[in-house]
Each structure stands twice: as structure tokens, then as C-alpha cells.
Image 1 (cartoon, rainbow, N blue to C red):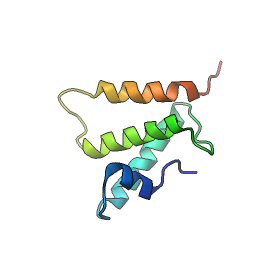
Image 2: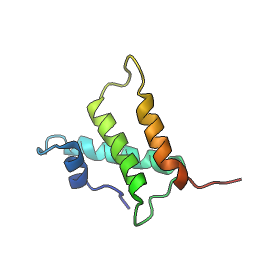
Image 3: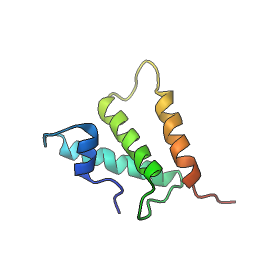
Image 4: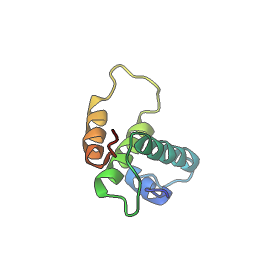
Length: 92
């Protein structure tokens, strides 16, 4: 199940045109896959901090389309990790 719909993502990004819909959906898919890969389940209902982390990743990737920059964004990584840490599944 998708945590974030295309229409909610576009509202978050303040995008009102459809030219980037396929690209935005690919970013939603990538953000949700990242969250799942690090051990956070996207169960229904999705907790607000988890949804916000997906939106942070989405907006960062949408606004920073280059693969590399002068300085990696540590604040994005820290914010996403801080939001997701309480929801990570622990395994021994």
C-alpha cells in the first residue's frame, strides 16, 4: 500500500501541472522503498512522522535532481533518521 498518493505529493511540492507526474510517482516509490528497506513498515494507518519522512525525501529529491552536489545534505539525512528511528523494526 502506498503511504503517499500522487495528489498529496503534488500538493506538498506545490506542483499544479501534470508534466512531472511520472517523475514524482517514481520519487514516491523510491522514498517508500527506502523507508521499507531500513526496517520501517508502511502499515495502515501510516504514522504522521513516517509520512513526513517520505515527504522530506520526496521534496529533497525533487528539488535536487543532480546525483551529487558540493555538500551532501546532512540535515535531510538527520531529519529523516530522527523521524523514522522510533518506527524501525528491531531484530537480533
